[in-house]
Image (cartoon, rainbow, N blue to C red):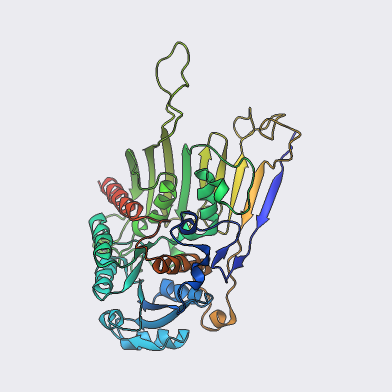
Length: 442
């Protein structure tokens, strides 16, 4: 007998607020900013775009739908490229060097979208010029360099954030509230939506590299350009793993991967092609007490969790993230690194192996409580201005609006870092990548 009931919630983006109404962004929920922050800064936040690639293009496009943001300048390694980008996006000033961009008095914040190995130096340049900084992920190529950036921002009282944009999508904000029991902070309240402490996490992000660029010269692969799935895709999976645990790092990591043969010599400068990993976490909960049989003094493993995942360039995977707890699971639907929806599935009492029983509604077959909750957060639609200037080149890039508006709220509140993706998580992510790469390259 199947008695599944699904509740569907569809919540459109509100451009006057900068978010969706059914779930407040974490910075507002924590009281760091307020829902009225949109009106606290009468003038737009003036962005300088450092670099002119696909990600910079899409970020610029997303800013065009936000009323309190403007792009004041763009910088590139050549003035010709900067002028091309400026003409395409209607940006008033084009700089032929990154130094000129960072010294532009009409720029409040620099968005660093250059090649991965240059992120640290370009962010330091911007901070030393007195600019707020948003650095596209990865923050740096070493954990100690990321920490240096956060320390420098703190010293200069300037905002510094890593662009882990996934954390700002409302589907992930919604997931966070239901993982951590913050339902009372969600505007649209759903009954009995805790899934219990997260015990199992599964995440994947694999693409067909041939869809992106030629092997081995494309920046997707080339080590000197910051290539390899450890730098392009792995941060997203690790971000999913860390969501329930904050900056707490795993107890153990086991990783393997596929790296190019050192022969022929031309492949020596190519990064990893795929990585598979498993890691365990110690979690803080109360489950390790009071759950022993009369004849067994051993504590159950209630304070442990396990996460497993795959990233790489071999083929396109399903790209979903699953969080499983004692009373249910949450699926961050594809594409999980920029999701527009999530699904909560309650575990009926007595069910095993995803099967069903006569008490499918968590113990009461007559209950009107839905077994599943599907939440959809349609992305802002591209405007005519966006479409006329090249549209969007990467999946769901209009979702950059959530990250950008969080930056503006936090700067208005004089807060120096993201609560959605903290400095501790940012640095921990890089330390984990370093450990994984050591194992893969053994």
